[in-house]
Image (cartoon, rainbow, N blue to C red):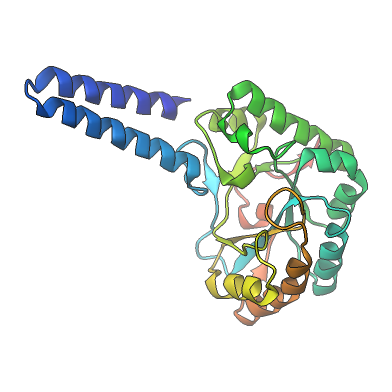
Length: 266
């Protein structure tokens, strides 16, 4: 709230100063430019998935020779078990950002994610795009309902949140701070939600990943892009092999960012 208020105050003061002190036709132009700059800053804070303007957002741990595989939009009865099977076979730990409605529908899968040693994060209750532009009350409801679904399945309270589509608004930072959550973006995404080419997905992540990067894939289907995650399943072993060949280890988010609050028993 402090950041949002400060931006509003600065923009208002700038416009007022331009109109008050510049007694010329240029005053309106100056005021307009100040307003455009303020709007641009606001838009950057909303749409840049790694901006910390509205909420502190983790996306990279520089200098760490490891990456964090993260999966969004599950649990999915068709694809999540297959992702878990690959991760178990490859002995890789990951983080799953689950959607609350789906966690309620498949609590057994959420428990299995946790049982296999992966981290469970909050990806909102409905994954509706418009919650990113909601006020405090609706954001709080979305996030707490997802928390409750995760806690009911695992007995643990999540500490990481990823906004649907990565968008944030001025209310998010206050809500997350009050709920004890840290926002997570991503440094490299596989675009597997819209691609059916496993080689392209794998090559993008393997070539672009850097030390400490958070990588984004999807185990859930039907919320955005294609309804088939077969390409993700095909790409995942190639991604793991390719990143290992580059010397990277795999960590959960709480291992990559140990200073963030750990997942605790509810």
